[in-house]
Each structure stands twice: as C-alpha cells, then as structure tokens.
Image 1 (cartoon, rainbow, N blue to C red):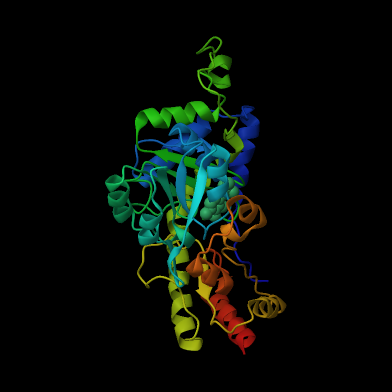
Image 2 (tube, rainbow, N blue to C red):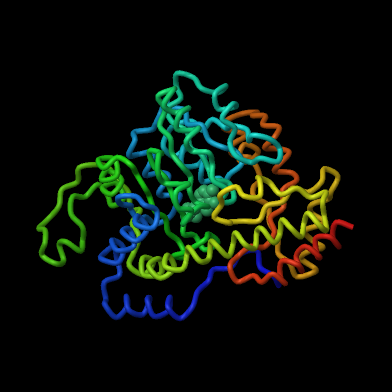
Length: 370
Ligand SMILES: *Cc1c(COP(=O)(O)O)cnc(C)c1O
C-alpha cells in the first residue's frame, strides 16, 4: 500500500523517548523549553510556546488577544474544522470566506474585504496544503482596517520566511500526519512579547510558577492571575520534536521535489487534471492536492486507487457545509469553495516515497480515470 502520509520515525526517536523515561521528569520541563528555542531558531523568530496541539494553539491565540463574544473572525471554509471551531470556542463568530478561485484554494482577499463589518476583529489565514499565503498583502489589508492577523500554520512547519513573521500570531501542528510530528502537539509563535507571555501563562492555568520550578526549589507556591487551560506539552513529545526538527528541512525539500515530479508526470499523462498553484509557489510540500475534471466520479476513482493499493483523501470537505455549522450559522454559499471541495483529491506525499512510487500513483490514477 502506498500510504497517503507516514510519519518518519526511527531509532533516534526511540532513544530520545527512553532518555526521558530514564530522567524520570515527564511533564513540561527543560526539553519543552529546548524544543521551543529550536523551533523559534529555525523560523527566525525570537521565541515560541509549545502546546498540546494546534487546536489548543489557535484557542490560546484568540484568548490572548481577547477575541470573544461580539467579535467576528474571518476564516476560510476550505480548511480543517479546527480553524473555525477555535473561533466558536472563543465566543466569537467565524465568518466564512470563499477561496480565490475554484482552482486557487487560498482564502480570497477580495471576498474578505466584502465581508468586513464594524464587528470584524481578526483574520485567520490558512496556508492550504503548505502553499504560502501572500502574508504581506494580508498584512496591508489588516492594517488598513485595524484588524489582527493570525495564521493557521498547521501545514507549514519549516517553511522559513513565508510564515510566522509579519503576522500577530501563528499556530503550528505536530499531529501525526503533519510535516514533523510529536504524535500530538503544537507551537504558538506570537510577535508581541507581552501577548506571547500571556499565551505561556494561559497554557498552564494562568499559574505564575511551574511544577518543575517548585520541584527544583526555584519557586515556593504560586498565584493564579488568569483563568487558563491545561494546554501543555510534555517532555516525551518535546523529545520527539527535538529529533524531528533536525530533519524537517531535509524532509520538506524531499516533499517539494516529489511534488514537482507529480506535476511533471500529471501534465504528461493526465493534462485534464489540474494541480493548484503555480509550479514555483513557495510550499512546505505538506500534501499533494489535485483537481479532478468536473465530470469525474471521485468516489469511484478513490475506490479504484485503493484497489490498486494507493491511499487517497480529500482536503477538505468545506466547513460551512458540515451539519453543526449549517445549523449554527445558516445557509452560507461559497461557490468556489464548494466546487473545489467536490473535485479535490489528495495523492500520497511523504518523504519516504520514491520517484517510482509517484509514477505508480499517477499510473493508478490514469487507470482509475479511464
Ligand atoms: C491538523 C490541522 C489543525 C489541527 O491540528 P492539531 O494539532 O491536530 O490540533 C488545524 N488546522 C489545520 C489546517 C490542520 O490541518
């Protein structure tokens, strides 16, 4: 079976986990701090805050910037549901914005401009599939309208220079199927130091000292200065993260090469299939999305490819069309998002794939399409 995605895990990860067990300090400690520094260094930012997931990261960002009841946050519907759910949990209203075109699945700036009201407080962009959003354009737009600019950066760990800078905050994911993994895990990057320290405080119940500090005698007792959460990362996950982040740049390069190979082969063998974004668009190579021709039966193609031992998936069913969101936010119509959502198919992409695997996938797709 050619898997859709697969975490790269080896002996270094095993040894790192064993070392944590041997040290007998399992909760947030020195490894979490070291992982934060390593992540910040890779992305060229001052500091970062490790958390339990990107979903927790999104919630912490909204909380730290006081987004809540009465506020609107512009979000793409072409994303994973967590992008919108975090806004709902904050008490604010997610306002779904269509994508640029049926084959350009980034949130549309022109559509966003149309949806701004006096209630709009923030924009949450998402780097679909790892393809970098035009952050300078969004920054200008956000500044014109006095809005905060956040990134759902779940797909772009390691995409240096294209994410995490120039925005107010970004949420990265280390879930199992992302470009690097800690099994579950996330990272928050916040430009403003005071807001960043507020994220750190809210991550652990709004407590002024940590368990480690008290254990080591560096602090006695604690105060609670905010109503926070338990969104901490633990030492086992940070140990995995420290190993994985070393290899992330190489993995991302491999992903981008495989993506280019897919483009070449698809153009040759299946010119009726469209690959979103221009060939040299900056990307972390998170996934390999294609758009099937309008008349294709996607379910049948997926079944045929599964029979040929090739896993596929869909990124994403549009959030505004899920039952909960339809009931809660009414009849939203986003024609480009809906068209893309109907026709998108995600092909296998991960660093352990070979060029021969890519050829087999395209072959299986060509057979399925016939
Ligand atoms: C994976 C993902 C998330 C959630 O990440 P977790 O770490 O699993 O909470 C959020 N947004 C997008 C776009 C994702 O792909």
